[in-house]
Length: 564
Image (cartoon, rainbow, N blue to C red; front, top):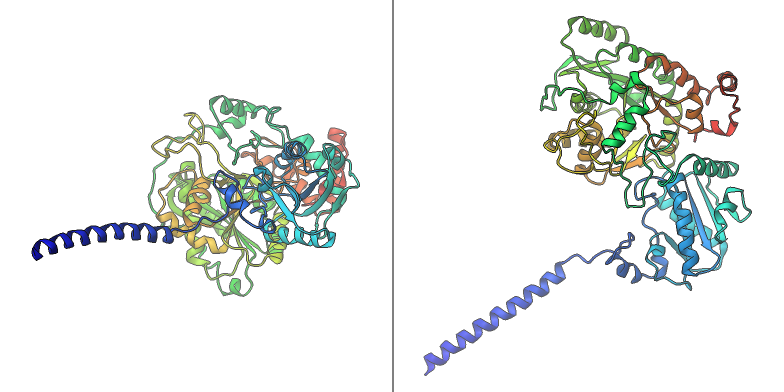
């Protein structure tokens, strides 16, 4: 009897223990789960989290346009009434302004106003006082926290469906907020210029290669440049016949899977104690094809001339691979002896070896210049002309205002989500074996971008562990940067897009470009360099304006020469 009772007791105890252990594990699992943080990109679950916050904490999470691009400026709008119809109308109208002009549009709402509209919550700053000075202070505080590169800030009150027209014509209700850098009279001019110059997606044609993107930013979370077969064909046909070969696929070169190359020509003595005591603001690494002697000479006589580099605090180096032509190699050796600005390593110099060349750049600066306290490492190509004075002046002002900038890549052209080209004859054609994805991660076009110094070694180290892709810009600023985590890619103002188009000097000034692509034509360096110099030299500016007037009959406005 007692043994039977003890057996049943043990069975019951075991069952109770099992059940209680199950419920205890479920409870512990719930407690251990990280509570979801409120999200401001309003989604199905995020809306509930956002609505649970006090209204004073419901603030836009980012200043970025499309969650990618730093805006030219920020405009705060307070609608004339709280009707959903008016708000939806204003969102539709001002959405075009965000896309075309890269202004960040933020709605203003007060505690007493409706709060259940998801789109409203996403880009709305809630204010809880009728004190105008305090409200302006709240706006400035948000700007200071979120907006890195915006140059002006304004406020439109009692906004109606006529607000766009009123803003375009300098309506009195538009007030410039303290802290604005851009002159107030330039804001309306810039607005009218970008709204007129940049077509909407419905107006756009891929063959219409003006000073704007090949395909406009869509209404999705990230813009996609879709280079399908028809678009690529039209792009090729839009270029002069003698320049089309630039966009055609080249034969695959021999791959060397290494991140440690030997130096054929080195400048190991460059980063010595003298540079430690007087460090440059930026190093400039130029990808150069070994046989591009003429382009390197053009750079040395224009935007990369030694006097300008010294004045701006910059050091420029050309990075080359090997040639199987002994005559070419002898000429490179002689060139390096004259200028002492050439780095050559032992990989075959070929377009589809650019990832190796880029790796060589990081190898050099990690090995020889790691102890030099420079600010930026710029990567660019030998077939572009750069307004280096404007570019570096902008970054110097930026680092003065925000001295703790880290883990950032500043792009002349930042692409958020570009579709991978699959047309076999196209220069950047990628097979599914090379990369099976349909889109690239956000990356900077290879014409030009700048890494903060603290990224140079991490990028070099991470490249060892990241499967290589021969498209070097997408590889380093996209895949490798993504693997490092928390890397910021920032669009430089006015520079997007970099187009496959031979631009006129006046288009450079009108578009406030700091970089222009020559597409391998060494004869246009002086023309573009003169256009850039006209921003900084009144005598050159006068000659430049006279030349434009004689050639086109157009008088360019002085306001266009404002560098920002």
